[in-house]
Image (tube, rainbow, N blue to C red; front, side, top):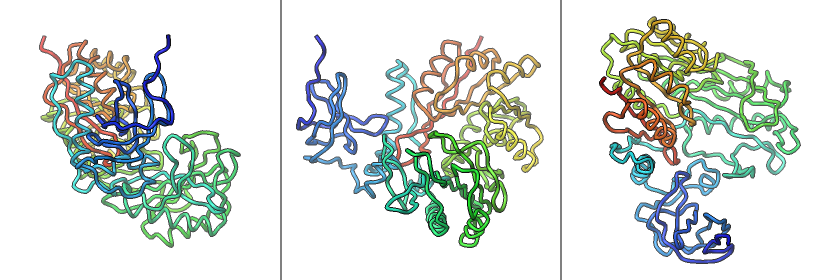
Length: 458
């Protein structure tokens, strides 16, 4: 006989929220059966309306709060929760920081690693207006090109002017660009019909330099009035030093296409990070929270505990943001990255900062590491800052074979970090000190974590 859920669709019931998922949804339990409730916080007694009841879990919406959490704050715009831009904005910042530490400790417990210590989450003084990059869709809304965002889990468009977590100057520039595009009657992209011109407006801003880049992502190769549009953008926003058209003619959710052309100004903006200067192009990966990134990277380099005699490998080096900091403290740094444009940027950034003890290569992290080891290069420290999917088994194998004394792991996904800690553990590397969470994305459910692994003594 099939297991039947203890609740049914459209049923109304009262329950207490016990926990929060890693997506920031409240969890209520009915006879052990979890109901996920958007916007509800732990400890709150809530009257629920069941929206969906699958065999193992269901979804419900709160129709009345019988008690509210002392950590609840009056939310800003409901659109920021609906779109997933700021799903935790209704929670005090102190509670958000505790929640992010708990995300890491819960995952360690599930993997029987509860002996590992987790430090308190490193937060921000001002946990809003921190993002130095925005990628906002442009769609036709009530007959005119409008910028906004999509509702979470759907493609329903929500017009937005204030994004709360973005640098306020970026929000201002987006509105100026939107109005210029309207003036020139440039059609917005239509996803269903795959017609129109402007798909997205991307804006980057240097935290220290104040330099701004505007990228118009178009479906078409030709942008009518491109010269006039870009001239007006610069005229109305004197801080814009780069206006770029990026062409993405594919039917895809990927934002940027492969081809970019400069319409006006330079093809990069410049900014500083921990006293180093970086050129940042449209396609560059550059951490979006500069204030926290300085803390995160400075701590990662500190934990590498370099004396000036070491050889360091920076896998997933991007445009060299960590590599250059490492180079100031190490004898030699080797960086690898799969994206050729990022390596070109990394080499230029090393030149810009007059750092000569760096070698950058394009390629797969595990292949480059294996090649360097076969060439007789012995890394003392390996620094990793991988994408959300974490490290491949092949990379861990290559890293263990390289036999560094220490691996410093900067993670944007605690689930894959914990998995990789287990894998390294099987190969004789164990965590030393506490795992250190950093709040790179306040008002959201994401957390970055640093872990240091050390080779067991032979």
